Image (cartoon, one colour):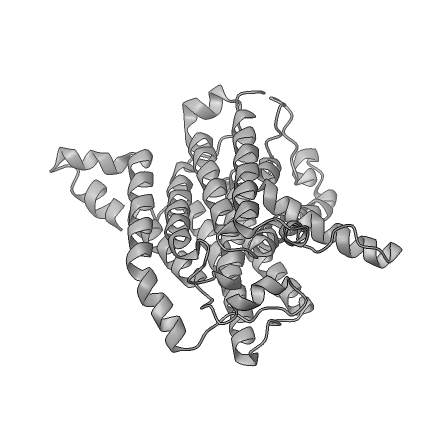
Length: 377
């Protein structure tokens, strides 16, 4: 809205308004607006959550040290989503369809998380939606994003090829039917693409959710991941940079950098209140929303492979749960003392603050590695 008002409407009369035509300037504005909005609204939201007695219920099988956190206000992810949506609406060009796809990923997964959190609060226990309901609703949210992408693809506004790190010219097209030009293979290719999309989005959303077990852990990693995505979205939408780096360019993707900048600022604001000892937890509404938004951005700019490194710690958390469950079912033995991975380190005696900071360091190193692959091609 401000983009239209300050740049398109007022720029012809006031030359200084040309600043709002630059994506980099609007990224900074969105980040600072999200940060300021979160810091201002945070105390009010925490107070309201306490008034409504929306407190966290701690699972009994988890670390015993976490029992003292019972009753801490949860569903603070509402603050994160508000602080992402408002600056995005203010500073992006709302004619850009990619912005709306990213918002759909954020809000649809966030709505599922809200439903899950509300169910937990209503039942006054740590169990919300059943595993089947979670999977089906998340699959439907991913299908929504996939449907929007296919609509853009049909209009020639989205390419289903993907960037592969370290390879300049190898860009596999996930819609194999479109590549071969054989209409009979298109249903198979479309199904394969949707399965791939489901894997990326559900993996991203649940990876953030699994990491949200220690004060500030998940949100700190999101600051790193969204910051890296800000760089990736800007380079993917910049004609000269995309050509220089041999990236599959997405014209207009620079607007997504504003969305990612808002995500970074909102995450910073939430960390202010979520740092150990946490005053509020993000809940599933924040974890699933952020993970869904992060995965959607990666799919939009065709950096699904780099997402494995940008969100490297989230991937490790997911793998630890998969390996733990698989090992126990197949061998009757556990690989880790407790899963997800951060609970394993708690079980062997690491202090919570040490785990958080060390996981942040690992996340930062992996995100920096992801950015170096842009040049090492």
